[in-house]
Image (cartoon, rainbow, N blue to C red; front, side, top):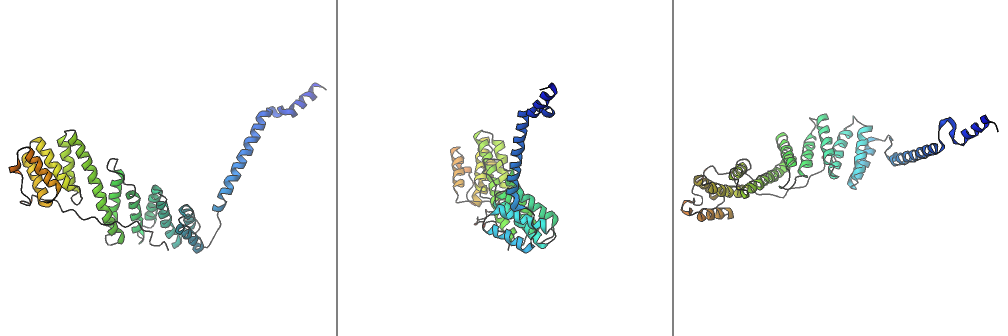
Amino acid sequence: MGLDQQSSSEDLRGHRFGVNLPVLLVGFAALALLSACASNTSKKNERFAYVEQPVEQLYSRALDQMQRRRYEQAILLFDEVERQHPYSSWARRAMLMSAYAQYKTNAFEDAIASADRFISIHPGNKDAAYAYYLKAMCYYERIRDVGRDQDLTINARNALIDVVRRYPDSDYARDARLKLDLTNDHLAGKEMDIGRYYLRKNQQIAAINRFNNVVTNYQTTSQVEEALHRLVEAYLELGLVAEAQRSAAILGYNYPGGRWYQDSYKLFKNKGLEDQFPPKGATNPSPPTPVKPKKNVPPVVAPPDGK
């Protein structure tokens, strides 16, 4: 065999076009793997392929999935209503229902984005009230305990206030007011938690600022009674008896039978100042508004056009 023929045979055995045979085989294997993955992805997405359907039928399918609590499927189908029939009234309904389904799957940020999109596209629509309400619920459901950061609680409060301000006579506003009371109570609880921490560290001035914030800005919450007592405690530690008397007077006027009033009296007594302790209900030095009774809070409801 000549040299040229031998070289041609070697080319055929794996060196043709300067490509090493093992490398070539690896390349074929990778190509086959990619083809298989593409095939699997294609099969997985077949059910979501674009198939034009009458809007009523498509929306009905989405609603059926929602009622079966198959929220992921419902979201896909509601989004498909928008994609296939973007200018129909069904698309508007589907947008809200998709947001609600996202809320039900705890995809709160997605639900907020969907609600914001509805508001931007349909700002004057009667169902915009629900979009604002659902957005508030997405924050409210994630309120954390008072020992943690309260950004979500603040966002919930602002969103609930927005519902009440924009739609004061709606059912959503009535529910928002109930939840707003609980949200404020939570924020006041956070202030109390910080104030008590400062008291333990003998940082009375910082503690007083926190407790005064509760008395001034969260007057309808259940935290006010203890806040007044803690003010008595902090002022007495600083030797500010007149200020302690004022806080005790407010406490006695609003909560004369409460345990915190009794505890405040003991603080005065321990310092030999019981004769300076104000009697129950004797004066009314700008008392806070009485605490509102808490009621059972109803659960979040589905969008109004859900059926």
